[in-house]
Image (tube, rainbow over all chains, first blue to last red; front, side, top):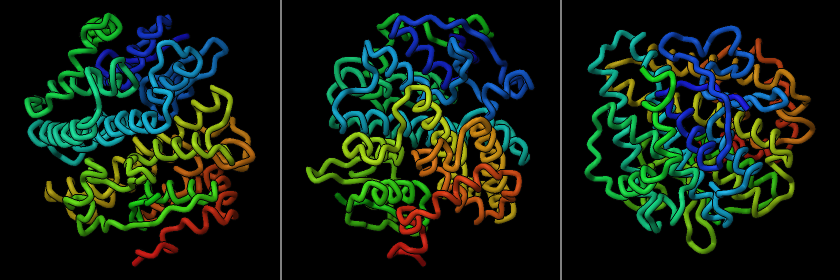
Length: 210
Length: 210
């Protein structure tokens, strides 16, 4: 398999953690988002959205969208399970991951911030937008876990939810979001960051890190 | 079951189609998004994100995020299947739905457009933002289906992908997006709109339609 990513992409980071947890190897290829390499003619056939990640399988099929890729990996390599067995718990784990992927990350990623810059906004407004989207979104995520047992987001082992959370907290710190009011999210992150699968997937550990 | 929605919410519309396709009944409750009813103190415990939909189950559990709700319905009521059996096809169907839910809808929903207005932008900029996000996003979706058999997004029956597509095309027309260059998406929509499950889920057919 070959994973196209970028060290600081939250979505690629999620997939790296999944591969590590499952002990799977994928060759890594990099598309530098700030240089626009994700829109190059050799890459768009793999991901017509012009986004990372893309995971190219042995037979050449290209999969896109990090949450869909992780569910594929979970279905084809079920150990350890990243989506729980119980239907209601599955729905809760997926909803938490989607609350981050759709309502936080997709609204503050490089592409959206570029749209704001194109409207004439400078650093203060652009960074303020990202800050507010992340702060409000993570506050809702903290509430989503109010009745869930820890130490991970949903119980005693990492799930798809944790794979979404850890990269989003990395992003939260880049935009100086105060995290004191989110003890449950921080506890889940701490549980994750004790595991080599998470440590080795960190942006600064990637070959393309700047 | 009880579905909290809003007639024009794309995300609630997706869930209505799923319920109809599976022949399931849910009582409907409405939260008027423009009046902010999705942030009322009686609703936030059901959906801490302050978004519709929420699906409350018989035992009182509340599920959020439309794609997670639809997968829950698909797993608990498997006929007709909305996510295919083959792992690669499952990943493609989910990626298509997420390309719409995350990269299009979440970036042009009422909440994001409200953020733009709060920055001082008027109708022209706000509607232009929604137009561009939808036009670019749907062009990528057209490309994602280039090698998929029709008439639906993925083959001979509707899937989660079609449940995301039809509400997004409804939204595209509200923002006057030209759809001529997207024949494959329009063909899938036409196949869907021949089915009562889609027709009856349309915004203008809902009790809260204005």
